[in-house]
Image 1: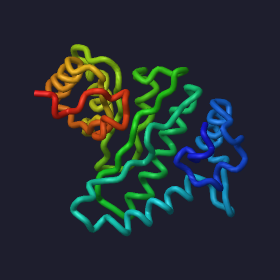
Image 2: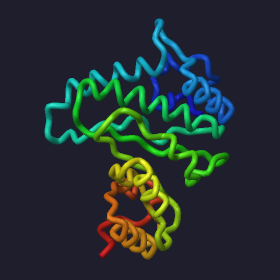
Image 3: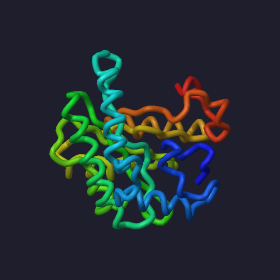
Image 4: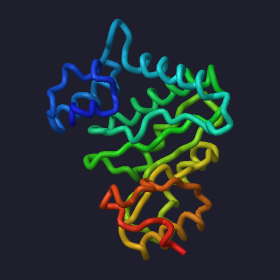
Length: 212
């Protein structure tokens, strides 16, 4: 938990967490986040995020280039009980946004080494409730294998057939990247590559323009 980058959140929400406090500080932050136990000037962090995102919606919703809004990139869990809390959080943010836009509302999967990211009973709790026009955009970085997206297709079916778009993926081996694309095509899943500037991120060693 690198406080110098503020974890993507404004510094005033992180003042009580140790600077460069590592995983213990990160775990404490996410526990407080999912419990709505972080406040600033009388507002909890969920409400503050919703109001911030609504300002963004009011600014860019009129543009055709704006396709939708992602609630939170790759939330981190440290306990299986937190999946249900993320579902409540996703529902809260999505309902707040839906009052101001009809465009896609996008939610991500949740993961941590302590909790499997492909355990159906966990991930099935994440979908925002009472909101239409939503997209599930998980991230998968593992090696490709046959029918690797069946799990995601089953989640979509469980949620009434909502669209799946792979929000991030990448491989360092050209053959693996080609196999990954074949699996995406076979499943009919749209995708976005993790980093188009592959030279900046050494772990993404193969640019897409080498795939044919």
